[in-house]
Each structure stands twice: as structure tokens, then as C-alpha cells.
Picture 1 (tube, rainbow, N blue to C red):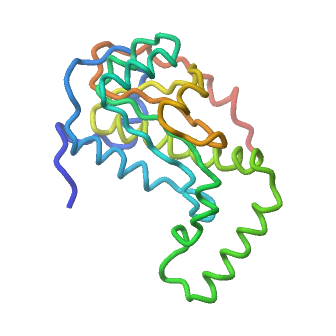
Picture 2: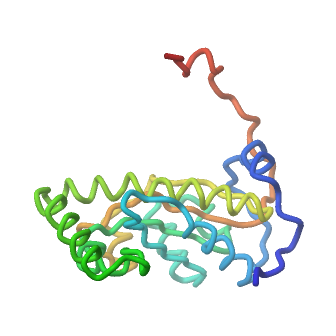
Length: 207
């Protein structure tokens, strides 16, 4: 059963069209039900072979947020938002637990075959190459997360301007983990800038 959110959810179209990067947030906590719904919707993002490479770190502790703000070169949105998500990718954890990603409807023989195939494919890559591949999948989840948040009436801003090594240390992440973004989420306390985007003629080529 889905939890009740603070307002009627936006349609996908409304969420896309009204999403802006928000850096000022209303100073109020986020209901746990809303946070869990955002994370649940994020977890439905697609990934190749269903590997689900993303690992989500939801930070609400004020002290830890202050440390994350310092690692983010003082950017105030980190402590102004009630929740800060650090979305990372961990391909080594995926490969060590492949059985978790295999569909339960598969026969034991098919599961064994799928696991052997994936092990062979990624075993031929370096840790860095696997990490970069996994990051492409986590970036899909990042898009889902921003739209899920906006759909429930929240603002966010994706950040990569932070000291990755410090964030690894603060959250206890392994060296091979890759970062999709740090994402403050909360009720907007300001309007975002109007969209300024290329025309379709500039970015689309029909074949």
C-alpha cells in the first residue's frame, strides 16, 4: 500500500516541466513516508541486466550534513535541505552478490548460466572500467530520483562539486565506489531559474 504524501503527486509531465535546481529550502523536516516513497520510486529505475548498481545514502543527521557541506566546499544547500542523498555506484558489491539481481522466476540452471555470463563479461574489465560502466546505470536512477522528488512536491539540486575522497571517508564508502551526485532534497524556499534549453533543432537529428 502506498503512503499518503503531503500533496497530490504531479504527473510525469508536470514534474519534468516544473523541476528546477533549488538551493534554498523551507526549514522543516521531511516526513519519513515521503522520503521512503522517493527512494522506492528511485529503486524502480531500469538497469542493464537488472544489476541495480546504485547505492543510496540518505543523510538527515545535522552533524553529518555539516561535514558533508564542508566536503562540498561550503555550499549551503547541503545543510539547508532536510535530507541529503549521496547516490553512488558499487559494481564490486554487485558482482559479489549477483544472485540478488537474478530474477526468482529463472530456473536454477538459467541462474547459474546468467551468473557465469556476467562474471565473464565484467571479469574481463578492470575495476575502473567496471566502475565507470556501473556509474552509467546509477545516473539513470539519479534522473528517476529527481523526478520522484519533484513529483511529490520537493525541490532538489544535483551536485558533483565536492571532495569525493572526504565523502568516501565520511560515509565509509570503498575506494572503487563512483558518485552519481550529492542531492539535497526539500521544500523549495525560492523559485528556480526559468528553463533555458536548446531548441530541438539544435540537439536532435532525425535519421
